[in-house]
Length: 218
Image (cartoon, one colour):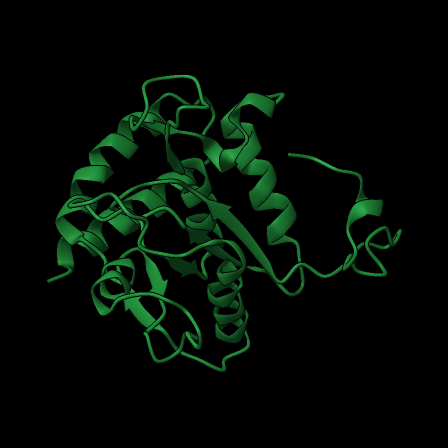
């Protein structure tokens, strides 16, 4: 779905400022039914770019491929990359790395499903603003979150859940990291990264750091 910017009633006044606008966060969004939590924040630049390169999305009925099969879609942008992913990653490292006030990276997933009846655990839509506001609070040092091997995730106390219709079981699931499931994922990611030419060493180092952190996680 696309529309002209003139149709957006709450667009920022400086959206087309010639000098640009501050970027507080770079947010990648995947679509997985189990592994990815609601949101996880990443402070490290290389690990943030690495996360974007290894973003996974399960095919839907509207997408090519078998429904439910996980496919890697770097930065959710693979069909539109006009040059190699390795060079694309280096471009990210150069441009974002040169910023005086670097944005925080995050990975969001609004699509976790209950394995029993298939309902979406998170209501989505306008409620997606809640974890994004938490992300800005984290960047500003107002909350601390919970450190995991794959990033920082919110505690239930830190999320504004007023008026949200969600069960304790669903909330627990979307704010939990399945370490064994993630360890399995890392092997697939390594094979995926090997397909890229000229991949910056910083990305491989990020992959190794996350892999080691998962191995050390209880």
